[in-house]
Image (cartoon, rainbow, N blue to C red; front, top):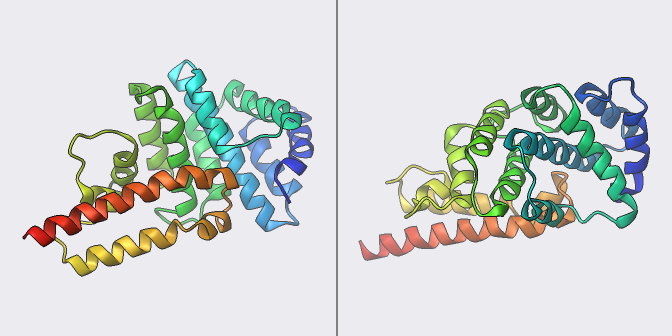
Length: 239
């Protein structure tokens, strides 16, 4: 079942709340989709992306058309449901609760409870995709994304790997992209590479609750991983 088939009911539940804040959003996800864990995972991912992108826009102070298009690359919203998505976006943007509270609640809703949770990394990756859409990541966006990573318990090495896929760091260190220490034996590099490719297989992404549209975005992640691995392999062959 598509999340959009039930989003109207979900938005109605949130909108009828007295405060329509982050607590109401999280509780509505748990309640409305309590009988379908798979659908709840997909809705939780989508709600987290929508809510946190709204908070990022508020932190940055402006939403560009490029960012809107980037959002649409992640979510192919049926025309009949665009008003509901806009409503949820506005609820998050207008909520007086700060983005850190939203991030904490979304981590509890979507996360595994362990550091470097893959689903939370997916959310952060999606936020990077939106933030960079206008050609650069602004200072406030960068601070926002780094703080989100801290709240999500994504360690610095993982954060740097995500950052390196989205920001031109010059001669980007391929070891940073793969999230492995420079100088490790090639067998360990290959093992790390194969794990990353496995973790980002479309079936794995869908199982984590990502919408089908996000798979298109994930192809850029895989391309960066492949390029980094090939760069390391070529370098070691020369040696």
